[in-house]
Length: 570
Ligand code: C2O
Ligand code: CU
Image (cartoon, rainbow, N blue to C red; front, top):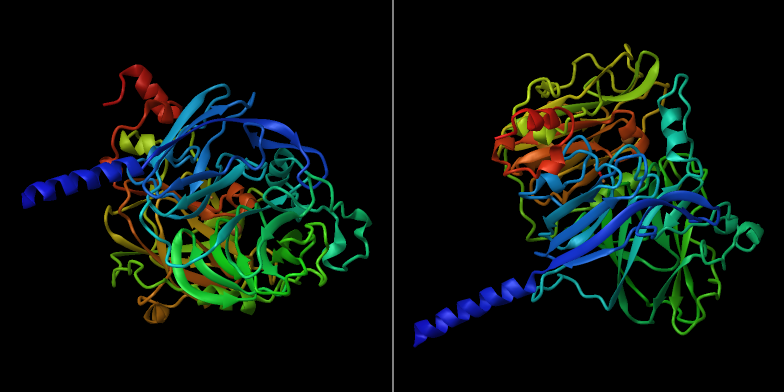
């Protein structure tokens, strides 16, 4: 009798598990459309006529199934699911030339993958500069049924942050790859959920200059967050900016940071929060302020001399009217070049108890020196003196089927050239372009030291947020100037946060550790769109021989297409 009960218990558990995890089906069409995200009409990339694209909501363990039709007339498209590790489905990572062929016009590609971990994610185009053309949306994974978040909240809001140029991405790309170089400059506006206020100086001087602030227009009015007094709200904040590093603050309200990139962090309280392109956070706010007022939430630029007005949202205490302007002006973001402020924020981010800890040692160390260079007079970004140029055959296919000459294999260095002075412009700015890929031992533990340096101009070193596909990594530490062996003794092995994106500060280094346990080919790159376009990334490949049968339409281009036509692939 007891064992019968046991068996039926198991069966009902299995049934529950089976019933609980769902497949979420979507049919999407990507196409250009007219839109006025900041009240200036432009064309941008939308999905099913929507900008930003539809929000995906799922529960941990669910399967996402997106039939993506390319409705662009003359160019390919792919979508990357930023922060989703794609265990067992590396062909669904959505990176053109890396995990798949760009989807041809009028063709459909099926993305099918599991979302295994609750958290705040997003998706975006990963071909050319299509992300900057507006191809992005939110992907939110709630905890599985029966599970609970380790914090309490009464309601939640989603804030997808981006920056927006009035110039088309074609104009931008031509400028970036021209001689002489034409810099795209700062974006015209910052957007919250696809809405921003171009040329609205309200943030700087409340009430003055509001003639240019079309605060009531439906396209560019501030986003309104309706709250009840005395409650706790979760704000999910992601940044998919093309260029800008951001800072977010709410008038009169403190924020408690609880999640970063789909991993819980040890809660800490701040007045304002930095967020770099490719990052996501959850913060909790208490609506404990005077309920007869509304409050501004403002998002401004960090790390570059701002030339873009902050984006605004209104925290609307019910039952006040949402059009009742807050009594105090929007919070001012810290000085754009106050890097100490940013560094202190980054250092506060630590893993919440219960987060997997890093292995104590790494089998391999990879040094990545970030430099700005010239190739035949064109300005590029290089890593270890190589500027990334993607090959016509996706690495995943060419590596899985051992095609010769499809890309340049090479060994990553474990150190920086001993005579390289990171505080000065490169002595010899010449660099090379290649489809370089670094093959990593499957199942090994890898340390990567990201080393920033001086750009081509004197006294310039920029912020670069680095994003790794296919993995989370532990952030072991940050430091100034050149990384030295002795710095490794300061690594945080106790509670380093797990993330998928991390910043390198000007003239600094950042150390990360990850387990190369996910068969596939994975991009690791600066998430600033123009920087990636100019070659700022590397390719990691691990365990590619363990990859199961790759859907043919993922790799039917370049050399794999020829192979398939001639005699098929094994
Ligand atoms: Cu969100 Cu390869 O990027
Ligand atoms: Cu960069």
